[in-house]
Image 1 (cartoon, rainbow, N blue to C red):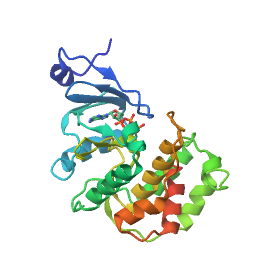
Image 2: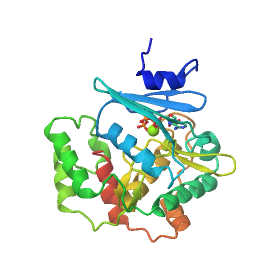
Image 3: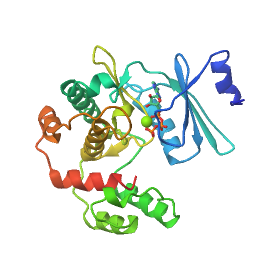
Length: 258
Ligand SMILES: Nc1ncnc2c1ncn2[C@@H]1O[C@H](COP(=O)(O)OP(=O)(O)OP(=O)(O)O)[C@@H](O)[C@H]1O
Ligand SMILES: [Mg+2]
């Protein structure tokens, strides 16, 4: 039986929850009819999501923060439940043109936000510093060398990333811009969730993750029927952006350590 902090329990009194099984993090995500409760260790990501939701309220279709409490090392975040289906739903994977349209619209919306006063800095300097700290503490345990272009260890990859930092632009970055974290309803209205890595960063942080997620979700690695791949150029065309393949490679590799 789950015992919740009083302020949160009071808001959820008498409501039945479904446990979400999509998320791959250590968070426990409980879906209520109009609210979502995320329970996880009190860490940087949890704190950032709680700090970003109020700031995003007038800037992006993101969940509204309803209550937040940290109790004995556990973070409880209660937010509003957005409507729409995840972009990894079959209806989108079966219709790549619509999927690319929604993805491009989501990225454009993020990049249209004025980042003045944004409470979270996810640019390369603090990000690489944090990766270094995690490496020192032995926390980078899920590094997969087969996805890291021949870098055998996280230390070797980090070393390369530190020495090859591209010039950065500062836009609002979702930070974990994968298909399950973007919602769209039948009219195409978008929703952004899972914002624990949201903050100011280079646009390629999100482009790199979006393209990786597109490739992985279409290939069927997370289950479901494999579908033909989509050429990344289609997303760049839709964004009216000339691809910078070196920057894409840099952020794709960086994401292997995040
Ligand atoms: N505010 C919300 N509104 C609607 N659905 C939500 C909301 N928050 C979470 N969900 C659903 O729960 C799933 C998991 O939530 P979330 O992505 O925040 O958790 P996570 O465990 O951190 O996931 P990840 O593995 O992506 O890090 C989402 O993909 C979505 O289906
Ligand atoms: Mg998620």
